[in-house]
Every structure is written in structure tokens, then in C-alpha cells.
Length: 65
Image 1 (cartoon, rainbow, N blue to C red):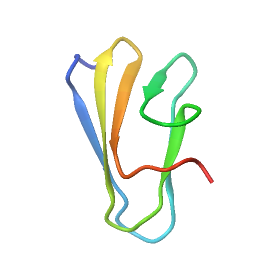
Image 2: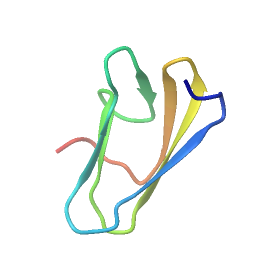
Image 3: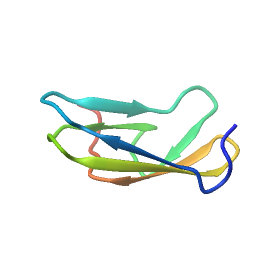
Image 4: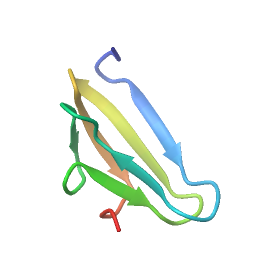
């Protein structure tokens, strides 16, 4: 249980792709179909908890390949 306003920062440090995908019952706003990819090295994405099981994604995230 995270408090509203809690922020998680995800950084793609190496080569490859990092996928962020909402779990069952979780809403992930700001992405297509509940998830997205971080594909460029050193890109940063922030996830902000706004309500019970609701998050907003902000940053350089694309559709899941």
C-alpha cells in the first residue's frame, strides 16, 4: 500500500528494453493497453500513485513491442 503522491523512478541503464506492465486490478494511465517499454539507454520514466491501484506514467515510454 503506497500513499497517494508516492513516486517511483525507473531508469533504463543498459542496452535492451525495460517493460512496465500493470498487474491484475491495477490501472496504469499514460500508456497504451496497460503497459509500455523503455527502450533507449538512460531514459527515465516516473510512476506516480494517485489512488488505490491507480498510477500515472510520465516520461519516455512507448508502446510494448
